[in-house]
Length: 252
Ligand SMILES: C[S@@+](CC[C@H](N)C(=O)[O-])C[C@H]1O[C@@H](n2cnc3c(N)ncnc32)[C@H](O)[C@@H]1O
Image (tube, rainbow, N blue to C red; front, top):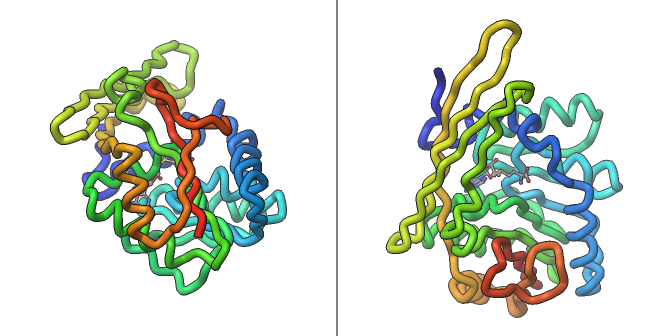
């Protein structure tokens, strides 16, 4: 049995991440990001995929003609992304870096961070630093777009998911616990993977923090962004009380 390490909670699942994401509509997500860019009339060519994971969005954006750099703090996830780039013969450059310590020496038209990646920064001071670093890595007129799970999603246990169908190549059971005092949601994840005649079992523990809309807005303003807009995920409507995912669009 393998476990993820505290410094890289995605280390154990990295090899199987794409199997897990098989039904995730990355193309549709990219189109939503492009809709937001159009909405604010901010054309983009050079893109940073922040917390890019195994590079699914990065590779799609590169195939669509964007110049893309991907950054993730997990070396195991970046290893998968680089393997994919090689297979695709894509020009995406991938770096292992933490969003709160981002230092690339170049700037971008768009920084995008999808799939609640930034909820994984559980210390508010580091989250605020990640906002500052994003601002510093944008061209004037650049845009920072990211989505976050809301407290509503944690309270309603949206993280509790089970796929135990014997025929599935990857089976899993996730159980979450949300602590309202610390605003931390801890998810105990169990996985079973069939490998030939044998089955491999491994676990991961992921912790995410719920950031309130006001908290994030304030951090973005403090980072230097003069304009911040919020949307209920994948719409152009403002978030509601029961939004489980919110998109933030910060304009530089
Ligand atoms: C749910 S995955 C999403 C990956 C990718 N954005 C996608 O949509 O498939 C979250 C990713 O965020 C990364 N991550 C978490 N905290 C990070 C941080 N502080 N800096 C950089 N990457 C981080 C993890 O290593 C993981 O690859």
